Each structure stands twice: as C-alpha cells, then as structure tokens.
Amino acid sequence: MNIDTALDDADAEEAPPRRAHRTRKRAEHASLGRLIANPLVKAGLVVIGTVGLAAVVAALVGPKRMNRQVYTPLRDTIEPQVDRLAAQAGTLQDQITQLFEKTAPESRKRLARNIQSWIGSFHTD
Image 1: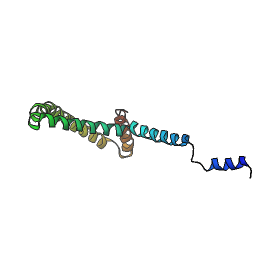
Image 2 (image 1 turned 120 degrees about the vertical axis):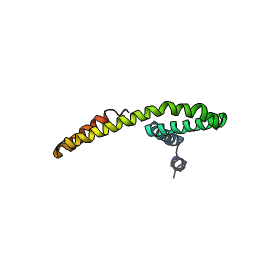
Image 3 (image 1 turned 135 degrees about the vertical axis):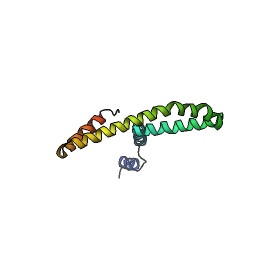
C-alpha cells in the first residue's frame, strides 16, 4: 500500500461534500415554493390572514361598536342583493329543469355536457 492509495481511502471515508447539502436545501425550497404557488393554498392563506386581521380589529374596536358600525350596515347593503340573486337563480334552475324535461331521453347526456361546458367557460383560473 503506498501513500497515494492511503490518502484516497481516507478521502473516501469523509462526509459528503457540502454541495449535496445545498442541493437538498434548494429542493426543499423549490417544493415549498410550488406548494405556495397552489391557488388553494393561496386562498387559504388569504382567509387565515383576513380572519386574523378581523380578530385584531374586533379586539381593538370592541364587539358592540363593530356590530353597530360594520356588520349592520354591511348586512343591510348585501342582503337585498343576495335575495335578488337567489330569486334569479331559482328561475334559472326552473328553466334548466324545463329544458331537460323537453329534451328527448337519448340526447339528455349531450345537453348535460353542453351545459357543463357552458358553465365551465365562466370559471377563471
């Protein structure tokens, strides 16, 4: 055994180079970035942040004042619009039901696919 092979054997037993550690850390950051880029995760983070801010504001302002100045006016503004939209949705449901009743049984699947496609066109990513 000469000195060169003895040094090579000693180098082989050392810990892996630091570069492998950095690569693994980058991969972990990349997977975290992909997770955060998910629209559902983003929406969840926004909801959590909004609820947290609302809790802080309610604690600072007080629940009675919050109800009087925020919730009641907001409810009074939104409630008529929600009622109107619910009434419109009901008529749309009736129209779709009538459409299915008038359609021949063999073409109802095609009609359902067309309606699903039409509804899907309103979905934004």
